Image (tube, rainbow, N blue to C red):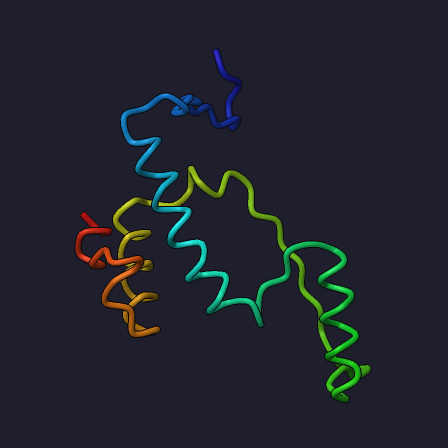
Length: 111
């Protein structure tokens, strides 16, 4: 029995789920699009953070008044509603003028 105030949620293993292969395939083709469009604003690890801060400093943008914020995302995949995630993906693809990805229409990807 959980203690008061301690949330409990089921953990499901979806490694062998019916959608695992399609999910892996979509990640593979969409990852290329995302990485290409977001490479200038994505920090992937500590080394890339230091590299980006160095570039920022060389441009004269790092000031004594510059504020830094950090945040931690826990359980990202369990927090994203599927419909909202699909809407966000469709918006991203439309903004970057994609009608197809690797020959697959974005409507087919959404479905």
